[in-house]
Image (cartoon, rainbow, N blue to C red; front, side, top):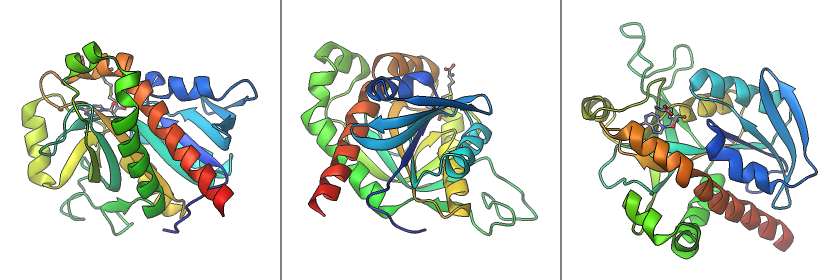
Length: 265
Ligand code: SAH
């Protein structure tokens, strides 16, 4: 996959409204909305950078269809997915951020014809994301949690979610069409994929399409729950109260970083 530090037009997608709301609000008034396949694509500038923002909805099919449209209809030069995920890996806690360097579809299983997790006829199970985008996202997330998070989210809310000093992780993300909400489900996932940091429902579909179109992409996830028996309660509370704040804080720094690099060049 080609590496591109300063994409001209960035496609940003999320699965749920609250994950995207803050970014949409920050796009300002000069936005053109185009409806394709039941989705609204918001074309304009975000923090001075040309962007297309879209609500993909939940699941791999929704994410894949939206990604193809961003590439073919809206001619984006790179794609970033932002959203929430269930923490699975040891030390991956609610409020932490995960940058996915590699994505796998944990529910793909065409055995005995193909090895477990391998995408039939594509010869691979794991899809890598773009190293330059990942580096910038990691720096943006680390700066955000260290410098701004405590201002954006008050102490009582942070205490409610047990958010202390969030960590930024980088590594494997597993995606599948299942909301993982029981310790047993999470345990089987770790048995099948020991290195997985978190689980969600879209990232690997985006990464597969981006691989097929040779499009640089990145997947940024904030941990909303631990994919256990309290996951659905934890997830909803996190979604309503903090999801958008994280997305705005990190993506803003990410786009500003890009702009200052472009200016410096
Ligand atoms: N039970 C939830 C379902 C939302 S799906 C509800 O009623 O609202 C969860 C969304 O957040 C998906 O887009 C997925 O990518 C992500 N996600 C967060 N935690 C997850 C988990 N534990 N398992 C799977 N996906 C999760």
